[in-house]
Image (cartoon, rainbow, N blue to C red; front, side, top):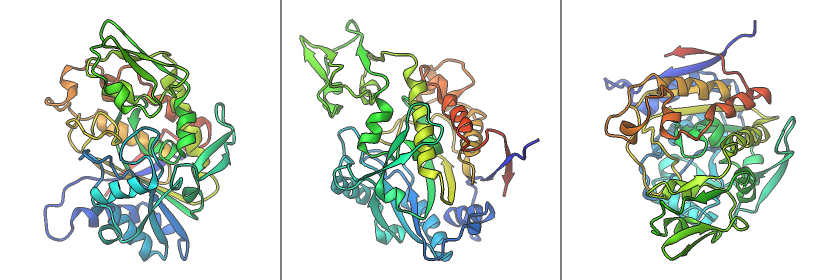
Length: 369
C-alpha cells in the first residue's frame, strides 16, 4: 500500500508574545521540509496572487515576507511572480500589474524581494513546455520568468472560484502561471450564452470583456461566439445570472487543462506548496471586489504534494459551518460548500486528473503542529 502524502497544518491561533502568525508560518514550512530543498544560490519563484485592486481577500504581503525570509535563510534568491490576466482590469500588462501589487502593499520593502511578472510586459513572453500525458494540452504556454526559476514555490490563498469551483494550489499554479495565450487556451473550451428573458441590459458583461464579445441591443445582451474566448468573467459579474455556460462539460475540461498546465510548471525541478485557508471568498481574487467569506478561517497548510494539499484544504473547508451572512445562506444543502456556491462547477475533476498525470495523491496524512 502506497504511503500517504504528508500535509502539515497549523491553526491561526497566536495567543502569546512568543510567536506571531508569520513566525508560525515559517515554523510550519520548515517542519514540513522546505529546508530539504537545495536553494543555495538558486533562483526561487514564489507564485502568489497580488489581488485585483479593490479586492481585500488576497493574501497580505506579510505572509509572502515570511516565505521570502525562509528562502533567503536557505541561501535562495527569491522573487514574487504571477502572470498577466486575460481580462481587462489592473493586471493585464506588467506595468499595471506591478502597480496593482504596490497598491495592495507588495513591494521590495514590505516583502524583502522583487516582483517579476512571469509573462513579461504584454503577456507574450512565454516558454512552450511539453505536457507529458496531456489529454488536452500537448505544449503549455507558461510565463518565461516562472520557467526560468530553479526552484518553484506556490503560496496560495485558498478560496472558491466561479468557474473552476475551487481556487486552490493547482488553480494558483496552472491558471496563474499560464501566459495570456495560455489562459486563453485553458478557457476557450466553453463559451457562455445569454438567457435573454433574464437580461436587464446593464452592460456589466460588455465592460469586463477584453474582446468586445458582448453586444447590447435594445437593452438585451448577446455574445459574439467568434470573439468570445470563454474566460467566464461575464458569468460572475451578471447581477441577474442571465449569462450561463453553454456547455456543461466546459468546467470539467477547464479543470483538466489546469491540471495539465500545473504539470508543465512543476515537472523537473524542486517544488513546495503552501495554502492559507482564510478569507475563503466564494470567487477569485481576480475580482475587484470580494464577497463575505463562506466559512470561518481555518489555518495554514504545507506539503510537497499539491494534490494532497488541495484535498486537505477542501476537506477542512467542507468541515466548517457556513457563514450565515455570506452568499451561502441561500445556497443548497449540499455538504460540498464549493459545489453549493457554484452548482455548475466540477472542482474534483481537477484533482482526479492531476492524480492521473502523476502530480500527487488525494490520500494524505494530516500532521498538526
